[in-house]
Length: 67
Image (cartoon, rainbow, N blue to C red; front, top):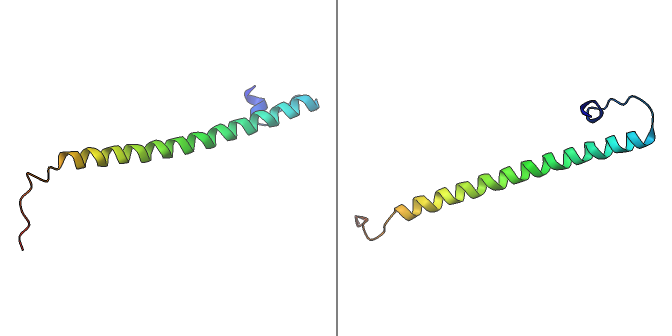
């Protein structure tokens, strides 16, 4: 199966060629979705980290600004 995914086909059966193309497209689709989900996860992680930092800052405990 790995050889079929890489483009090697033992014969010229059109059903095998069609299945190979379908599987290659599915792999590409899954890889694209993985990249999208990883980027979304990174953005959510950064936002959650920012929220935790902002929660630690207590405006009532902060020193007044010098004018």
